[in-house]
Image 1: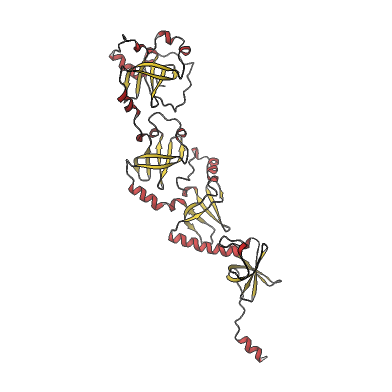
Image 2: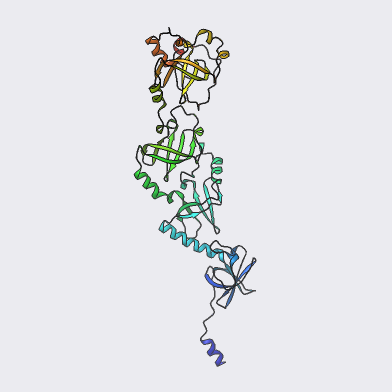
Amino acid sequence: MSDFAELLKDEKPIASYDYNQVVTGTVVLANAKMILVDLDGHFTGIITGPDMYASTSDTTDLNPGDKIEAIVIGDDPRSGLIQLSLRKASQIKLIEKLNTNFDTKEIITVIPNEANKGWLLIDLDGIKGFIPVSQLTPAHYPRVEGANPEKILEHLNKLVGKPFQVRVITIDQQGKKIIFSEKAAVMEQRQQTLQNLKVGDVVEGAISGILTYGLFVSFHGIEGLVHVSEIDWGHVNNPHKFGKPGDKVTVQVIGIEGEKISLSIKRLRPNPWQVLADKYQVGDIVEAPILRLSQFGIFLEIEWGISGLVHLSEIPADVAKNIEEKIHVGEMLKARIITFDPTSKRIGLSLKALDPSYIIPAEESKEESETTEIENTEEEPKEEKKTRAPRKKKEEETPAE
């Protein structure tokens, strides 16, 4: 007995394991159903079910003799086995790493696996992470008319499965609330862009959203708006006809107010009114396709989407009678320019003036300039009202299509 006592004197006491304690052991057996782990030769740990899987390790490649780290989640008195979890150990490591990311502001990559109307959700070994819609960059932000919830969700679902560069902006110690921000990941780039940006700069960007009032364009981490009035020189009633989200576009910066950036597409193109002013003058004859017929006369599409009006008063009586039988949309028609006002964006045309003896009185020329208008070929023709009462002469001289 004394000899046996001497032997035990130098042995270390058998350690017990506490709940949530992290332990390191040696794999004894690993298969699809369980992993058995030797814990210092005193106990055997067992890992089963979902606790076998963790993003930080691939359990399918475990072999006897491999060292692994797990966390104690219980014990089985009948078998004497210590219940372990690789997944919970991985979660603890993950929370520690995310805390480090939060402190260092390191940019990391996450992949959303689910979406709802206000968030993109990320599953991190059973821990839920979130990217709020408000923390998305312009390239991914859901630009939706009327903030329609169903359309927002439809947009967010398209982002599921895509990698996102983010920063951790909120994390609690239990890992129950982890919030990521894509905007924060590009904050330095945004600040640098805004610092260097100036009115007049021409930049390459991508359309990040389209609403009735314009195109949103993102570039270098920031976003600006091309208002409908700055998309094209003609009238724009449907911005969707000028591109789709993701399309590359070149824009000019025309205004900077804090982080509010105003952009223009049309200013990078020649002003068609100036082009026409250099090419045509009053008295010139033009031949152009008939754009449409209206209660005021005939619209001809001259060039660059600009149209001129042949007012009813400038159409010979024999043509004006049953005009729809003689004039057809798309046909070429010759007319003489009788008024040209690039400032007011009006061109007046005349069929009567094709007669060499026709003289434009100065006063008539002035009035007639008010009867011409510009239209954009992108605009849908407006339906003519057939029940409108005849107008007085003064009203006819000032049409407002």
